[in-house]
Length: 399
Image (cartoon, rainbow, N blue to C red; front, side, top):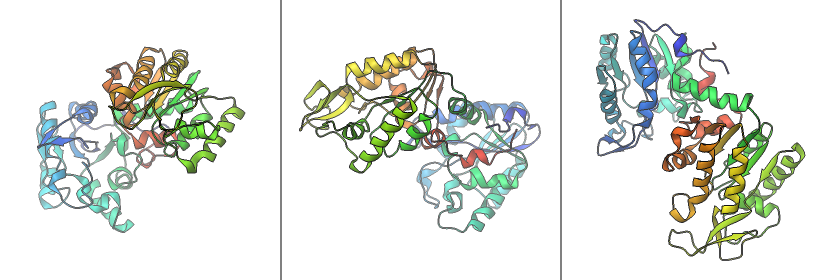
């Protein structure tokens, strides 16, 4: 997937319309976690250093197409102003006469942050016609001479500011953050180094079927953890007690097991478990091997499984991880996920962490900086790993 990069674009003296992901947690008007803002700084600073000006477009939360100031981008703009050596102005809206005037007044080295683009229903295209969405995107496009996307987190959405605005601007490139996502996830899926180990966890198999199916054609070993493991257990005719089960997916789990065997892919399930008699941090807890008796539910992989999975990871040249091994938010059920975190951090592999909970896990284990790449997109990285074309990437100019 070869897309035009920001570093190949001439932005000197130009107004750059840049889609960023400033969808950050805010408490009492202050940004709680500025990771996403910091992640966009290399692209922002590059444009400023090259003598361009910036019109930044982002969403925050889900205001449902209405101007709800609970979702204002003011806290994000305030935090950005503290992080860059440039004048940062927050526009009162996304378009209109006042915004037009602010855009026209922009000088090289200055930043204008548009108000939340999701204040308009046309952004998501819900409750409006395609023609209305096109008209909205055309107005947005008028604010930039070139377009840069650095918002991987929404690249799987065909929203106006991601995949329609590009119809009206000739030069549309990928920012450094988006480029890194494409490089790591793309290489892992197109030309991975072997052995390639995929670690797939999380509660439900339904959200990960397409990922498992797609990775099965590329990887050597798949390690299954989390609640989804017990639907596979049921498919093998093993007792799971009160563990999580998606009854309507048992047949599918069986088919995946057969397919893995036919393709010569090693698909490993937990050999032991940390089980509890209720879903709570203060439940009675024990470690057991094999099948699970009634009245008990598996909430984490056991130590033997953790050792088995860690050994597989230690031999890998490429590791892709999506989804935790257990309910790691509760201390008694965190050791399996933590063990995998440590194993991936210690390995010499190209390690790619994709998706919300896995990212939270490596951060809480303090090993995020030891991973080759921690993806900034939950749903987007999942869809990328499913082998889907992401509208926000497809829309960019080819290199």
